[in-house]
Length: 84
Ligand SMILES: [Zn+2]
Image 1 (tube, protein in one colour):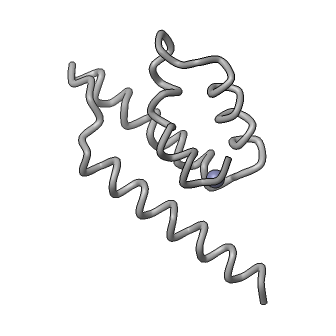
Image 2 (cartoon, rainbow, N blue to C red; image 1 turned 180 degrees about the vertical axis):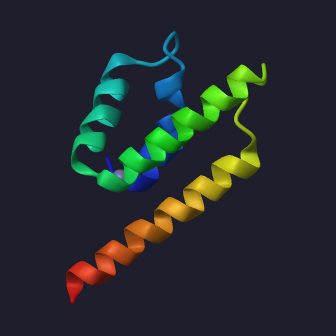
């Protein structure tokens, strides 16, 4: 699993009733090896908790896109640095 796949499936980690167990394990395995996605995961979880406290369940698409853009930029930066 790479970062793009992780972020695409991240929301399923928060849908405990629906997630397939192999997928949850794959997502957790990626979290162990990717600090950027840990940040994304924590940010997303906090955002969801804030929205739940306001009785809004769905994470707005706009925020999902912002998170996705930010994390992909970070990952790209890291890869460039590692190559040097
Ligand atoms: Zn990642």
